Amino acid sequence: MKKIKLNLTAFLLFNFNFLFAQQSDLVQFYQDGMRAYEEKDFSRFLKSFKKAHEIRPNHPTILYNLAAAFALNDSSIKALETLDQLIVINANPEIARDKDFNTLKELPEFHTILQKIDSLNKPENKGNTLFTLPDKFLHPESVAYDSKTGRYFISSIRKRKIVVRSKDGNTKDFSHPEDSLLSVSGMKIDKKNRLLWACSAAFPEMENYMEEDKGKAKLLKYDLDKGKLLATYHLKNDGKTHYFGDLVLHPNGDVYVSDSGTPAIYKLESKGNQLQLYHHFKNLVSLQGLTFSKDGKQIFLADYLHGIFCFPISNPEALKRINCPKELSLKGIDGLYFYKNALIITQNGIKPKRVSQFFLDDKFEKVKKAVPLVRAVEHYEEPTLGVIVKNDFIFVANSPWAAYDKDKNLKEDLVAEPIIVKVKLSKK
Image 1 (cartoon, rainbow, N blue to C red):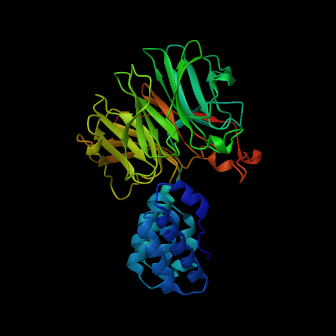
Image 2: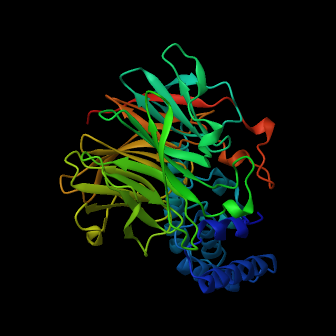
Image 3: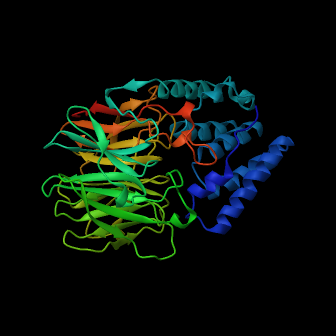
């Protein structure tokens, strides 16, 4: 079977924090490996993908081709080990039909792998559609909830705005054109002070994107009841690309914002008027969701490539990775939420995409067990960000990131009305 081809441009854009030399080497090894495969030089095919894997470990396409290379070089044990790594992040049913794995197909370990693939692709749905939105071109990313009024707030990547859904089901714009928003992603509500906080950044998918917008990011502060933009907090122009994706509010009123472009966390103190660099995480790649422990002393942070980390709010240098059983993956996490000593995660960087509840040990060092909440459900193609309301998790279920063409226009036949889903959280 023809090997899986990688869109190298998109791949390298995602890994923009790698050094240019690393990117160049990765392209070289990948392309050389593909040529070797076409030429049936399987020894060189294996050598090249070993090198690619060293530079970019645990990428599903590279793992797939590496497993095939081991199989074609009669390294059955290594092929099986690599497939076992692969299916945790991409339960690809094509493995069963790929002739490159013919040397494995009589082995019981291979049949065990196929059973795992079937199990992982079995739909799991503990949720229900809470409501849909009428504008299928909205491209929603996050939802926030105001318990006082029963209103839902939904952010838009494409339309550069925030919409509000009232208790009676009516939807209208909450933000205004004069607010000059970019794409809007993560949002949080400060119930006590009646504020809505939102992240805004220049994504190429937003309407009227211009090249001079590239790298811009800002934090927005709204009066929740009046719908008035109270303040916009910009980063100083430092020549870097910034993507504000999510934020979290500390009990003391401080706002922490994740920047996947740097990667770093920025902080706005409760009585401050300027975003400050809280910490630059030089060994991470793409920061996503943020959340606090119940007492507000620990920060949990998701990195799209490397997993979940935890550290004391007083000392980000004490960053530690949270471990998990080998049958789980902490890659591809977007949203991250703390709930009764567990983490609620939305995972759209692995296949099948899912929402899960990860129960932690008391020291926040490892995942003890995982409970799938929503997985491989038709029409819930891309879960992104949400909000915990009492004992429910409410989230955007079908954010249409995969529905854009090369010119960053949404393909009408690939988008549907946005779906907001509610799922009951597990108590244990």
